[in-house]
Amino acid sequence: MPHQQGIKVIAANRKAFHDYFVEEKYECGIALFGTEVKSIRLGKVNLKESWAQIRKGELWVEGMHISPYEQGNIFNRDPLRAKKLLMHRREIRKLDSLVMRQGYTLVPLELYLKDGRVKVQLGLCKGKQLHDKRDAMAKRDTDREIQRTLRSRQK
Image 1 (cartoon, rainbow, N blue to C red):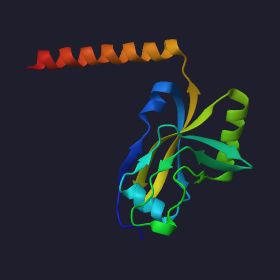
Image 2 (image 1 turned 120 degrees about the vertical axis):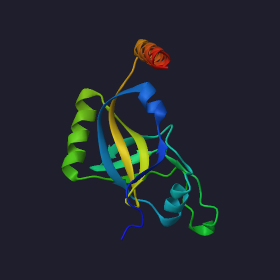
Image 3 (image 1 turned 180 degrees about the horizontal axis):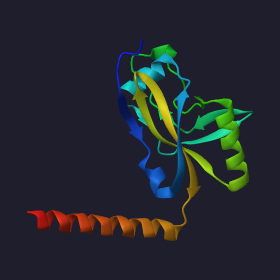
């Protein structure tokens, strides 16, 4: 039985929301070794430069850095090794067809514990151009300014 209840976010890939339009989000499991899980529970993981790809009908995440567990000694794995993501075969086939035909990219958005199990939120993303990034920053700035004026009027 899992020890914890609920969701605890371990790491988030905020850079992905800056670089990509996120069309859809999927939850998937991840195949890990014991020392990797212990290191993740300590929050020693980085999603910044990671991506996912489909090879031979299986979904793999590349570039996810999980720091070696300090007490793991000989049981530690390579921090940048490819890790298998666990999804239903029909979902993987659907993602594969979208990535091949329409130019989407699979990007890990979040890594979290759900009822004691490590899960990855995978985003189906399309790349942003420079002008799209500028538009998003301008919109965020105007939203901030609106919120600031609303707060000042309430006081």
